[in-house]
Length: 497
Image 1 (cartoon, helix red, strand yellow):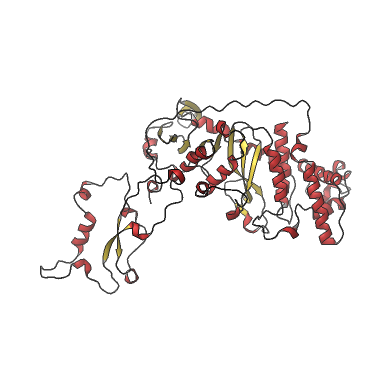
Image 2: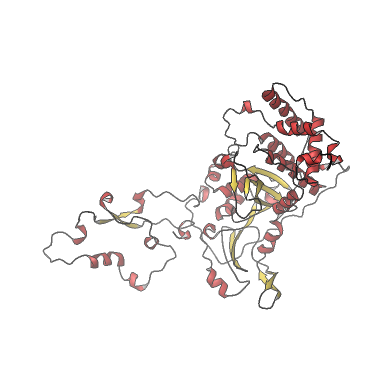
C-alpha cells in the first residue's frame, strides 16, 4: 500500500469487488495495490473515459441474446462466485496506528513549498563549583553502596544460612578492584593474585577468596519480595532508579539527543530480554534508550523489556497511540528541565511526523531527526531518481503545521523532519569526490550541520564506556548491567569533571 494513504489521506468511500459467497470462491482476496485509489494518482485518458474496470468485466463475459433473463455476471458455477460491489466502510477496516490521533484526528495535512521559521536554543552556561569534589561519589552514592551491601548480606544468608557480613567500606574496596581491573586487563581474575603475575595494586586490597565470595553473592534486590511484578529487570531496578535520580541532577545543555544503547550480554539466561541489533558493536545484549546532552553526559535512561517497557510510566491517551520510538522520546523528554528552550535530536528509528508535531504540542520540545520515507507524513517530495538527476547537494522541501520535511541528496538521499530549524540559510559540507579525487564543498540545508553536530552525544558516552570496561562476565544475567552502571558513572563523572 502506498505510504500516502497512511498519513494525511482524506477518508474516502471506496468500492471493492468481493464474491457474494466467499466460502465457495477461489479468487485471490489478497491486497491489490492497483485497486487502491491514491489521492495523488491521475488516471490516464483510457480510464477517464468510463468505468474501465466494469467495462472489462462486461467484455470478458460471454455474449447472450436479448432474450436472456439473467445477466452474465450473475451466472454461478461450482467453485466460481459472482462479484458484487460493496463499500469499504462495511468491511470494518481498522485505522492505521500511525495516522493522526488526538486533537489532530481527522485533520488533513496540507503541505506547502515554503520554509519554516528557525529556532535558536540558548547557549548553556555552567557555574564552576566553589570546592572541587569527587564527581564519581555524586553519581555512585553512599546510599547505593549501602543498598547492595545490605542485599548482599541478605542473599548470602538466604543461600548459606549465615550472612557473609560485608560492610559498606568493604564494598567500596570491591568496587575499587573492579575499576582497576577495567584499566589493567589480565586474561583471568586469578592472575591478579597468582605469585608469578601478582598485581600489588589489586592483591593488596583484598584476598582472592574474599573477592570471589563477594562477587558470587553480590545482590541488588530481595528475591522474596518479587510478588509477580511486571518489571522484568526487578533484580537490578533499584540501582538503576538511584542512578537515574543522580543523572537527572546534572545540569544539562539545551540540545539533547535520544538513541539506543546496547549492554553486551551473550548468555541465554535472560530469555527474551536479550536483544540483537546487527549494526551495533555489541550485537547481543540488553537494549536501553538514553537521553544525553550534546556534551555526552547521559541524563535519563529507559530499559527496554518488550510490552511492559512503560509499566511505571503514566501515558496520556494521545501518547498511547504513538509508535514505540515516539513513546520513548516523549517519555525521556518529560524530565527535561526547560522544555520550551530545548531541542531534541533523534535518528530514523524514533522520528515520525506525529512525533515532531505532538512533541511540541504536549511538552513544548522541538525536534530534528532523520526519518524513514513511510513516516514522513505524506509530504509530496521529489523521488530519489528525480533528485539524483539534479546532482549532489540538491534538495526538496515541503512544510505543514510548522514542520518542514526535507529530502537531500549526498551520497544517497536522506529524509529529515524538523520544527526547530529550516533549510535557510544554506551552508556547505566537505565531501570526497571520486571524479576530482579531492574534497569538494557540497551545499546543504542548515538543519544538516545542526543534526550532525548535536546527534553524537550518546555515541561519545558509548566510546568512553568502552575505553576501560569493567569485567562483568558472569552466569547471572544482571551482572553486566551492574558493570554498565559502574562504567556510566565513570564516564559521566569524567565529563562533569
